[in-house]
Image (cartoon, rainbow over all chains, first blue to last red; front, side, top):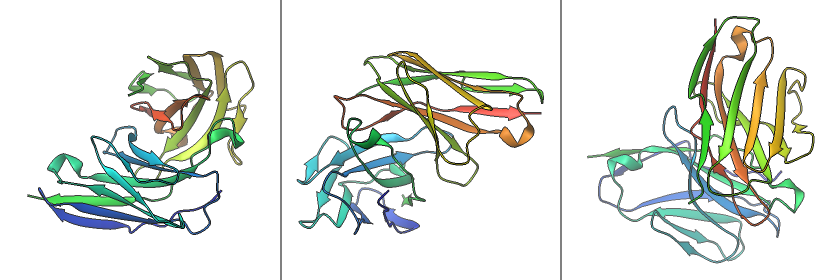
Length: 113
Length: 115
């Protein structure tokens, strides 16, 4: 399983943009890049995912490097509710090697008012 | 977005008893469900993958006779912790997906405390 590397923790200020980096130098052509976040005592919440192109949704944007060896999750305006552990995970589709997601340690994001 | 539920949200049981946890996909058919375990201050650890109508595939080091998984329908998977012991106390989380989805959706988790 391809691994990802994320900073252990990051701090941001409320209402400012946050860029959460993720390195995945051993990514394969069929690996999707998934981002989830988790609050204490809750299940992970889906944030965004992508394969090659940058992606936007109501929660965040995902910028994927051209060589796909790194990506950045962008929260455009951080709020206190965005404080969580963010996981960047590589995974394949269900019909392609089962779709397993292997979680790393993630980045603990704190947001200061 | 796809919704996954778990029941119960928390359970306390005596050592030696068995506990069943349900995972349901509420608005989609989940051909595949995953079970994870999370200890305090740690990340999620994948325990097993279950495909509807098939036997579950367990990750290395996970005892299949202790953690029984059944995925009898496209919307329900169950995890039974048999002969639970205090070391089985943990946060159990399921996720669900299918061949038409590109990602997984997670349930809210079940907190198990074995006394």
